[in-house]
Length: 403
Image (cartoon, rainbow, N blue to C red):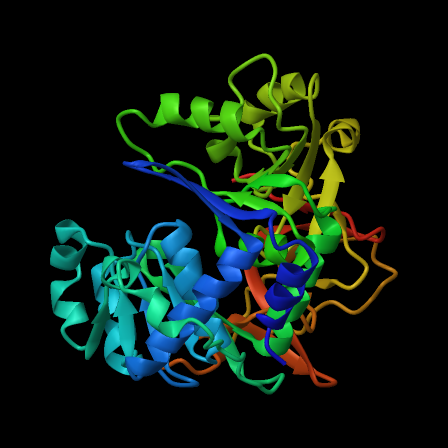
């Protein structure tokens, strides 16, 4: 299996429909599904010529853009493992990851500050790839050559994400081919995607879901001096009907009394109290839903349901395929704790544990499964620690503890 096969299918169904639209210094760029398919094929062939092979980890330090998504899709097509990293990741943990995992290559923008910031860490990576070096090559020489998605096993690693953890550390998660496909299908299903819609898309898994469903992805303008005006122009020009993003991101796009964005999914539920009033006003022109779990949806509710519950810390209704339980905090010296199994108790308090075959596995700095972030193995199931404290009642209603 290879998730890129869904892109081929979508390119056959709607070849002329725009797939990705973004804005550069020179103007807007629009790439159709047929053009996206051809570009990914071309780039996959070039990456193969550069020596990138199946199973190689490739570190990606680009901001979301057409270039970023083309490299992501091309790497997935040839069976390489894209490693998505935040440019603001702490230097020490990032350096430890690079030293331990030794990626085969990294994809860098044409900016000096990023290279200077990660200069010591990037010295350990043998190959540096720059999008502008691929962009202007003569593609006519490769007419008639088409890349073929590499067949991959369900348990093979497909994607890694590095993000800032607590206390300046680094957290890593890895999706297998099966888990990535399930996560994408969950996004398509729970975000109610329909072919032909236009989505304001700011993160990689959402773009994979959009490509699967036939949705057009509009890549938001990066922060900058003129970004506020560019935000408004971008929305007015492309008229995206939907957006899925954190509350802080949405505040930049929804300041007007009306907007073409009719479907709003806020992915950092529970909603911050200071933002609740703002999104209530947004209901005049849009349906607002709250999603808990960010890029791996675990629970959701409409804004009206959220208000009716009467608590600002409710995360929403958990989906049926998400298993949840609470692990109480122990005050014993050995700290050996068994999760509460007595269902007669109406309410439990402690750390939220989740389980599901679609969840990415936590990784340590060596790229292996991080057992410290797993609560236990039970009947072959993995229970993941979320680090979230709260209470869970008999109706699967989880409420975060105020801090």
